[in-house]
Image (cartoon, rainbow, N blue to C red; front, side, top):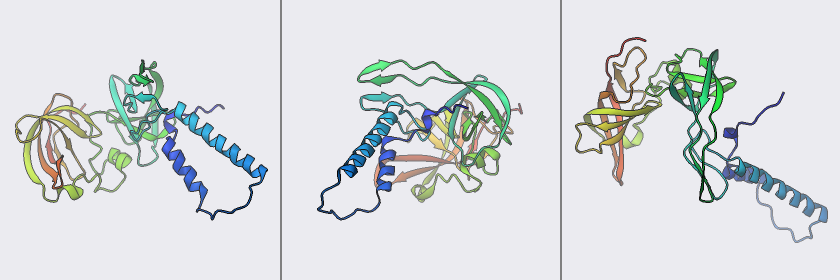
Length: 279
């Protein structure tokens, strides 16, 4: 059976270099003796092999799941998130905290093409979209998240849903079983002031809300609200979620750093979503 390598699984060049350094072992004292021709030949062959691997990785370099672009010099790629389009919704992918338990097949999905790539200053249009078999995840509604056939380490979450809600299957898949994560407060919110906000949702990915603030002149209008495990969510239906264009209410911690006047983070302590009937 032929196994095709997923380009997203390729490591980056700096990771390859780090791996090679780990294999070198501790530094050895310099010996003033003439290297044998056979040893020089083996070292040369090893070096050429390492360069060939690096060149291959550069040729096939692209955006990995952790959001770090890679590629050969002279090539810059547009931001290409892992995504699958299924039944009119674009689901965005991230690494699962555990191996997924996959359910029945749901049909065919589409992998959208990446944005334009610039090679030595010349734009290259994106390639055609790909096709993939979409499957359900045990314990999770396909409205909230899906997976792809044979891939048990990537979960694709629908926009507007909240993996941050503890004691749900989606939370455990994304963040693990600990009820206290994610913790968006940490050290930056120890002395945070509290604020009441009204905001219009522009987009929502993995629960983070990109919003336009409506009645908060002291804060930038275009902002992001970060829910966490302690956030209380009111409304939004049996499977709480929001859609672009909806107006929500929020109680937030306005987190700042004394040594960084540009730092601002809005952490939700409570979200009030609109009423929504069960699907």
